[in-house]
Amino acid sequence: MIDPRLTTLRTFAACGTVAATAELTGYSASAVSGQLRELQQALGMTLLVKDGRGLRLTSTGRYLVRRSDELAAMWEDIRAGALGAGDQAPTHFGIGGFSTASSNLLAPLAATLRTTRPEISVHVIEASPTRCFELLVAERIDLAVIVSMQGNVQVEEDDRFESI
Image (cartoon, rainbow, N blue to C red; front, side, top):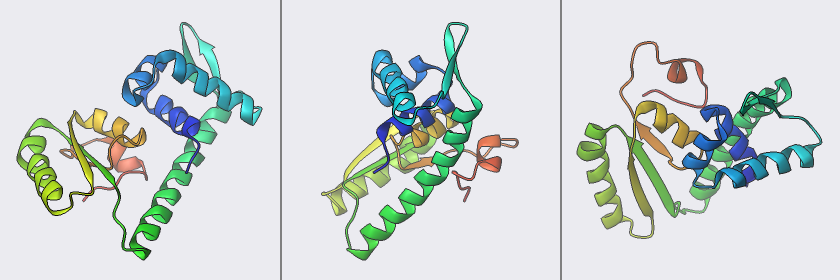
């Protein structure tokens, strides 16, 4: 499992503020600050610096986030392979999407999964496309259904996301 402090750093990079990171992860703002501070101390590197009333990533922090995105993708591949090799299913599955997708696609999917795979805890989150990306990075959901909009940089230029 990847260090949860690293996931918090990745979420901070996606959200831009401690408050938004706290809201997205379900931690308090002081817990987020503490995790970020502990990660810097454990690594012996400056990952964040004060910027006005907030924080911003240093070049070292940006590098670590970029590489940790690769690590997270590799971990997901390993985890999926291990689940498949043992004929095991995940125990939690989070899906998110915009309002129409949530009601017309995701709610029926969740109902079907709950009936056919009762061992899986399924939760649906209705959210904007930007919020869905943040939830994916924060590992709060596993799948997002969004409308692909022209010029959506997150889908077009970010290897973490796949358009189908």
